[in-house]
Figure (tube, rainbow, N blue to C red):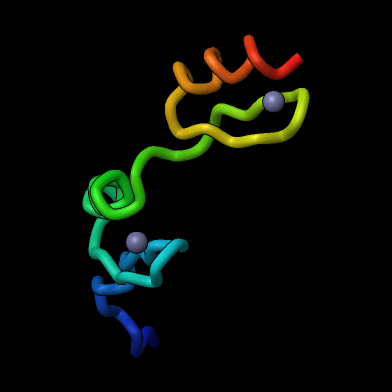
Length: 64
Ligand SMILES: [Zn+2]
Ligand SMILES: [Zn+2]
């Protein structure tokens, strides 16, 4: 017997601010608006993170 048959379990939480959203697409949109782009551009030389890959490119020229 399943007592917890609610379909509301698919809530996702923003890891950055804890805001609860009901679907992943909204969460992704929220993250973009509220927290900007992911910092996935990192300088291997000094470990500095950049939101904009172009900033990393500029930084790399100086950092060496
Ligand atoms: Zn958030
Ligand atoms: Zn660097």
